[in-house]
Length: 241
Image (cartoon, rainbow, N blue to C red; front, side, top):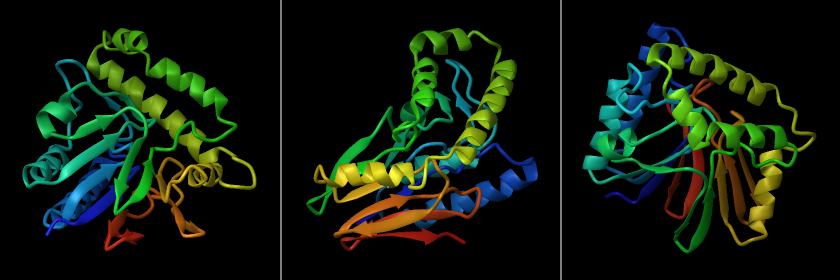
C-alpha cells in the first residue's frame, strides 16, 4: 500500500569519475525501485545533479537509468516532486514532459495528517547570504538563461561544471555563525505553525525536535546515501546501503 512519503536531496551526480558515478547511480536506482510499492510521494529537494543546464533541444549525456527509474515510479502511481536547487542552473520541460516529475522554483508547502510541512532546498534562506541571493537572481533570470543557451552545449556544460564547483565550495566552506543558519530559519517557521521543516543544501545531516516540531536536513549522498521518510505519523532519516 502506498502510504509513505520519501525525501532526498543533494545527490550531485556528475561530480566523480565515470566508474564511481556508475556505482553511485546503480545504488540510487536500486533505492528508487525499492520504494515503488510504498511511496505515495517522493520529494527531491534539489541538486540531483552537480550541474544541470537543459538546452531547448539537448539534455546532458548520461543517467538514462535514473530518468527511467523516476519515470517508472511515476507510471506506478507515485507522485514525484522536484525543487530547483542551486546547482540546477536551467530546467525547461524535460523532467515534466518526459518523466512526469513536477518542478518547483522555490518551496513546497503541504499538509499530511493535519501537520503542516515546509520543504525547500535551503539556498538563500539564512540571514547572511545576501551575496548569494543576488547571484541567484541573476542566474535564474530568463535573460541570462537565454543568453547562456546560445553557447554550444559542449562549452556550456563545461562552464557549468566550473560554476558548479565554485558553488559547492562556497556552500561547504560557508560559515553561518555559531548556529546552523537553516536551523534558525526552521524555528521561525515553527512559530508560523509548521510542524516539519525539511531542507538540504548544507550537506549536513540533522534531525532536531523542538516542542514536538521537527527540523530535518537531508545531508548529501556524496558522503552517505540517506533519505527522509514520513510514515505512520512519524518522520525519520535513514541510511540507504
